[in-house]
Amino acid sequence: MRLSYRYQILLLALTTFVAGANEYILAGELDLVARGLGISIGLAGQLITIYALVYGLCVPVVVALTGRIGRRTVLVAATVGYALVSGLCFFAYDFRVFVALRVLQALLGGLAVVSSLSTAAVMAGPERRGRAIATVIMGFTTSLIVAVPIGREIVLHFGWNAVFPLTAVLGLITAFIQRYALPVLTPAASIPLQEQVAMLTRPATIAGLLVTVLWMAGYTLTYSYLTPYLLNVQHVSGNWISVIFLAFGFASLIGSRLGGSFNDKLGHHATLVMLKILQAIFLVAMPAVALAWPHGSLPTITIVLMLWSITAWACTPSQQVRVAGINAKASGVLVGLNQSSIQIGIAAGSALGGVAASAFGLSWLPWLSALLEIGALMLLLALHRVKLSVRAARA
Image 1 (cartoon, rainbow, N blue to C red):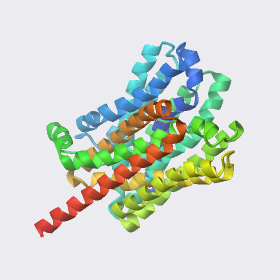
Image 2 (cartoon, one colour; image 1 turned 60 degrees about the vertical axis):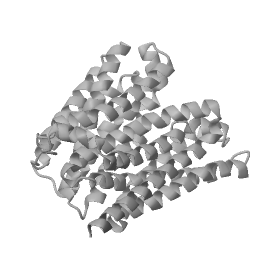
Image 3 (cartoon, one colour; image 1 turned 60 degrees about the horizontal axis):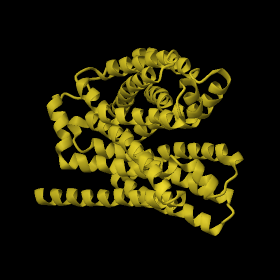
Image 4 (tube, rainbow, N blue to C red; image 1 turned 120 degrees about the vertical axis):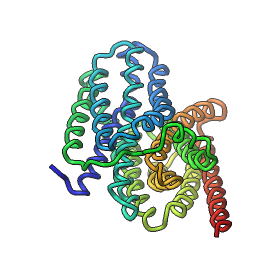
C-alpha cells in the first residue's frame, strides 16, 4: 500500500496530532488529574513542565543516537512506543509512576514529531518544503483545538485517565499505516554524535535557536495565563472563554497554513520579520483594548487574539526552514534542536509569566510578551546582517 504524496504528508500530520494530544491533553483536565492522583493542582501542573523540559533537553540526544537508522523505521518505532506508554498511563495511579511514564512519552513523542518534520522536508523537496512542514505542524495545532476540549469531556464522563487508551489505539493505527504507506527513506543524519553535540557550541546554531526560544517564550508568557487575563483584565464573561479559545485555535490553523505559503513565496527571513512585527503590534493592542473599553469588548478582544494567534503560528514553518538551513547536511538534527527550543521556550515563558503575574499583575503580560518578540526580531535582523556580511566578504 502506497499513498500519494499529499496523503503521506497528511499521515505525518496525523502523527504530530497524536503526539500533540499526548502532550497538551493534561492542560484541559489538570484539576481532574490532580484529584485522580491525589495531589495538588500546582503539582499536577508540573507534569506539563516536566514533559516540556524532557522534550527540550533530551530529545536532541535521542535524535542524534537514532541518526543512522532509516527515517521510516524511527518514525514507526517512536509512534508505537508512545502509543504503548499511553496505554500504560491508564493503569498509573501513583504520581511517581505517572511522572516516569510522562518522561517516556516526552522522549518518544518528541522523536516522532521531529521524525515527521524531517521526513516531510525530505519528501517535499525545496520547492514545497514550507507548505509540507506547515501541514505537518497543523496536526500539532489541531490537537490543541480538538484534543483538549474533547479530552476534558471524556474525562468528565469516564474518569481522569480514560483518554489514554484512546490515544494509544490511535497511535497504533497511525504506526501501522506509516509502516505500509511511507517510502523507505535514508537515515536522518550521518554526522557522528560528538559532532552533532558540538553544533550547540557554534554561535550561529545557538543564536538561531535562541530566536525560537524568545519567540515561543513570548507566546506562552501570555497564553499560559490567558484565561485569568481575559476574566480580570478584559472583563470577559466566563461563559465566553471556551468560545474564545476555540476561535483562537482555529486562527492558529489558519496561521500555520498561511505561514507555509508566505515562506515559499517570500522566503523565511522576510516572512519572519513581517510576522514578528505584527505579533508585537497585536500584543500591544490587547492592553489598548482594555483601556478603550474598561468594561470589556468581547468582539474586539476576540479579533485581536485571533490576529495574534495567526501571526504567532505563521512563524513556525519559516523558523523550521531557517534553522534547518543553518547546516544543510545536519538539517534533521537542527529540526530536532528547533523542536527542543520550542519546548524550552514553553517552559521558560510559562515560568516567567507566573512570576510576572505575581509581581506586576496580569495586565503587564502582553507588554512583556511583546518585548520578547521584539528581542527575537532584533536578534533575527542582527543574524541576517552577519550572514550578508559573510557573503560579501567571500565574494
